[in-house]
Image (cartoon, rainbow, N blue to C red; front, side, top):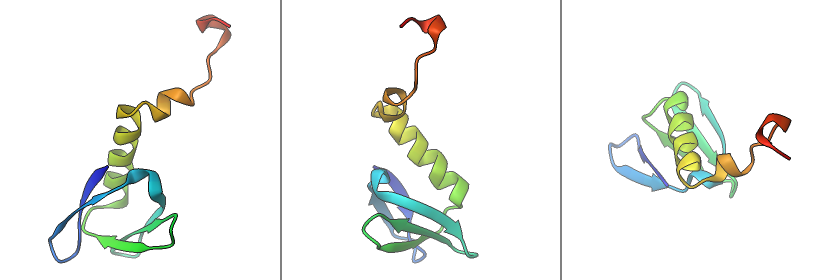
Length: 73
């Protein structure tokens, strides 16, 4: 889960696994896999960084990384 801030200043805890896309139009719009759209104060890059950190923290990114021959097979 990541924290973002709605345009009205209220914080929102968002399930980062549901993020489908993030775009700045110029406000930052997060589209979820459910089709819901949320407009937030943070920049797209910051949200992407938070989502990436969350996925690393729960082991999701490491679980999908391929091993090379040097690491063992």
